[in-house]
Length: 314
Image (spheres, rainbow, N blue to C red):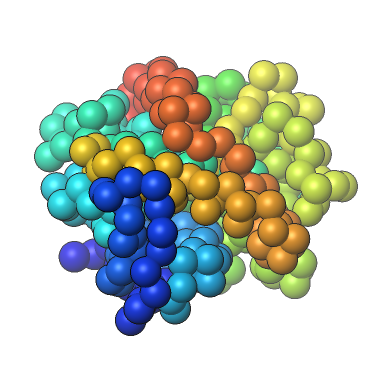
């Protein structure tokens, strides 16, 4: 399986945790798997490591579709969870002609773990220092500027499609198998620009290996306060990413409640908040049914963008 399976955060857990009902009385009493369906080195991997470590401390122990299907078909006992960026939950249903699971029915919402700004970054050789200059360059050379992404249908890909549509430019999408290989090619000058999540690009920006042109969210990012938003040049532009935790649909409610409760505590811990902030991410602070409603709204939003872009995968 191409997805990365995190098995560490409850390795050899021996403690018995007391909950209010029989279904959750002994949870967790054996190792729990959080499946991360994207390659190592990207934002999803980084966020998963933070959450896994904190859950281990709290609970007494140490393309998304493939990983999502594994969770959708797993036993609904709370021991297999999916921590993922939006695609398997809110994008792929509109993007793929056929999926082996129904994103709206296959999962039980646990928590919005973190939200992260998307940043438009360029190789230093690109003669554009802001969005206006980049748009002018793209219009002067239509079809010659490539933008990379972590894959077809990723929020980073769709951010580029949104910019193409709203700015009226012709830039060419180059999909990669994850954000890390795309970043490698950006650093090497093989692609001139890309949208990527803040946790993955911030170290490269701080090291001046790449230039941040703009933040794709509705507001400037705390981690890059001097970098303008795309919307300051292209009014109405907004694209951001997030990471959510879900379980198989029939997971017992007491188990879901336990997970949500623990994650709510974790997100308030100063050290956890600092680690999120250091990555340019913000704790999600949306749990249970509210997270389910959030995903419904996101599905509608990204579905419109996908249909407008014409993106599709067989």
